[in-house]
Figure 1: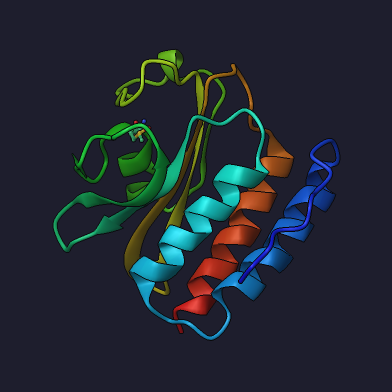
Figure 2 (figure 1 turned 90 degrees about the vertical axis):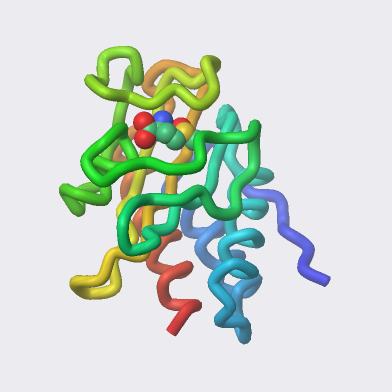
Length: 161
Ligand code: SME
């Protein structure tokens, strides 16, 4: 069974590099999207400090629908262009939100959330969904987190091919 090695959470680039390595090992040999999404969310949940939700929303051809996640129960459906998740999907840009209260249209699933990062997941032109991480801390995520999360998401996307 997979055993995650302890990672140094004070060095973000090293943390994400180690996590990407672990994710690659964890997802290796399996292409099932739900299985890999569930294990990916569990891996990140236990590795990153100061987060209160992490998980996927998958595009069903019409809107985003919640997928495997860790944290409190979340809103199920999000329209493209709505909230941080819908904005990431529609704009194809990672959304780094230092204060969710200042983000117009933010959808509050857990009132404890103060900052958020959402990475859009595209296979070429095809929208697969988004990867969403919330924190109870203001400005929890920075450029290192953006680069690290995008790197992790690339590992997830690669596992499905
Ligand atoms: N805050 C998100 C909704 C999803 S939850 O955070 C799990 C948004 O505004 O899209």
